[in-house]
Amino acid sequence: MNLIFLGYFLISLAWGNLNDNDDSSPTVLEKEQPVITKEYFREEFDDEDGWQERWVLSKYRSDYGKFRIGSGKFYGDREKDIGLQTTQDIRYYAVSARFPPFNNENQTLVVQYTVKYDQQVDCGGAYIKLFSVDLNQEILNEDSPYYIMFGPDICGKYKKVVQVILNYKDDYYFIKKNITCETDDFTHLYTLILRPDLTYEVKIDNYVVEAGHLEEDWDFLPPKRIIDNDLPKPDYWDERPTISDPTHKKPDDWDQPQRIPDPTVIKPDDWDEEMDGAWEPPLIPNPEYKGIWKPRIIKNPNYNGIWVQPEVDNPEYKPDPNIYKFYNISVIGLEILQGKSGTIFDNFLITNDEDYAEDAGNEMWGVTFEREWRRREGQDAAFKNINEQEPKKEIKKEKKKKVIKVKDEL
Image 1: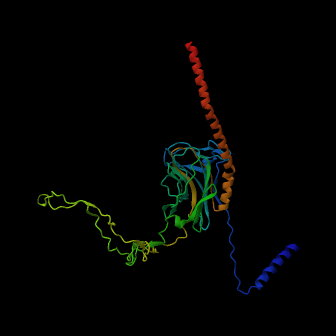
Image 2 (image 1 turned 60 degrees about the vertical axis):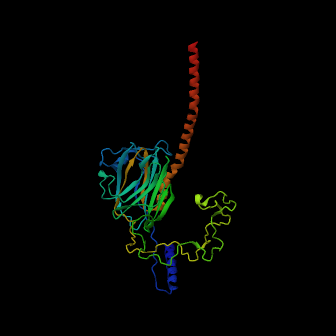
């Protein structure tokens, strides 16, 4: 106890000395509050059919595609890589899970999950949506209002993007940048980060593939600056980069005819002007002809550049620090259309801590990702072996058939 008391005494003494040496008025130093990690939602489908108690299948359509639990044709860990898999081609799918509602005010929002195309995907969405607490999961459909739509979306040869659509005042805004998604049949980790300072990041496999500012990369607000149409181009403004040299004068002997009478041809003796008309010798090119005179071209000393209409502050622009905010977030769902089925969704996480999300991604996805690649390489090598041996077997069969035919003929 004496040691503890002595420790407190020394700390108090040191603090008092610091205050005594400070001539200024006392100030309270605000300490940066540590981030309290909150895991709002996590789903790894590690309990077989238990997911059916947590996820609600929409009944809005009678022909929604069915889900199953599966790990795909190849995997890093059969049990750990199990996820929610689509099973029917050319179908809409709608399923969602609810969690306690929360607001992301004054904190970062991180949404993360994995996607595996266990098929040669041709056209289909693999994105997730976040909804408010008001969503009726039983009738989830493509018109259900949502807060965020995020994830890969592939259709045809050219559309291979990561969708990032955000709801702002009940309107939907697409990100203006083109983010390319993964299209192979391995498992990939997709992460969206929205911060209170209005910055964001999109990560694939825990690597940042796009980042920026919400105001700049979405058209939530009117532009800060607009063109001033009331300010015309000044009369003196010269946009000609080059001009004819005004000091360059045409020489006096320049103007020569292009063709002249041929001096070697004379009027024939039997030419009768009354009968044949006035004699005119044929014309030939004039060796003295220099062409059309043009003054040389020089740089315009008065060149002002191309006129650009000036911009002014937009009176309709008002900054909004609340762009990133969503209230009563309470449901995550898949509402998608798929051409070829087989996509596996797994490792869902919603949190307020970027570092925690990255660590969780490495824990849930990263530990089996390399093994998944190695297993696929082994399968490819095995298939290659089989394919190389098949032609040899066919040749042997053909030879046997020929022998049999010869014997029959004999």
